[in-house]
Length: 135
Image (tube, rainbow, N blue to C red):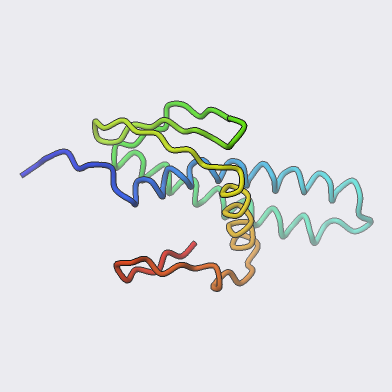
């Protein structure tokens, strides 16, 4: 039997990542430019950051694939004083989500560490249903 499934927590998690990853990639690219211009031997740092950018791009491709499979579409992103408001559609339902700058900064910092290959295990959260919400 086929029916429309309401927007799930997983869908919302993917929307958050869809908003965060382009910001993370832009920050990495900005940092590469800064390092290139200001360090005498920037190559090792640039290589590490470019590897992180590639990992973030790979995750973004997976997010887009999930969007396609689940019928998700972010159709508007508005930067506000408080953060980013995203309006999206999912399987016939419309919704929105506002990510505050504090949340964006904290999540981006954790994800950047992940893509750089640093240990982020102490940031993982245990979900009430027993699932570990890793990054």
